[in-house]
Image 1 (tube, rainbow, N blue to C red):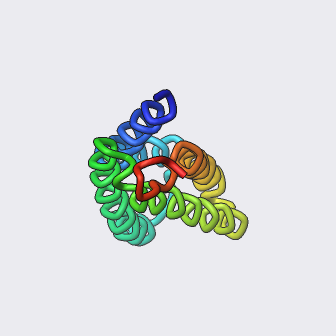
Image 2: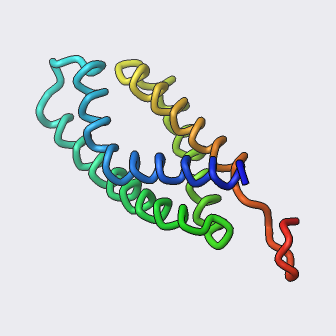
Amino acid sequence: MYGERALKVVLVSVGLLFSAGIVPMVIMVRSVLQPHNESARLIALKTADEAMMLSLYATLGIFLLLAARDPSAHRSVIAFGAWSSFAHAAIMAVMSIHMPAARAEWLITSVVLSLIGVLLIVLAPGKQTPTGETA
């Protein structure tokens, strides 16, 4: 089925992005968009916050990779991935209004996370009925 195959591609892509690609991507985006005159104290605080968020996303990425094997059996993981992406995107969009120095970085991340959430929700498998049919 085309929808399940597309979902598996999205799950593997997002899983790899979250588990293996998120750290290099954050470093790259920051180096391009971040002004280089911040104090070491602020950079250390951002690094601690980012380490926490990156650990959550790395864990989610691993579970999304596992969900790609049998998406129908892992609907709740897929839904969590989608809704947590929406929540994170919304918070970053609001924060970008209040902190103009990081606006570009946070808005780009908001758009990417929203797109991930939409893809996961749209492609998510339907609920299985007791007879094995998709409802």
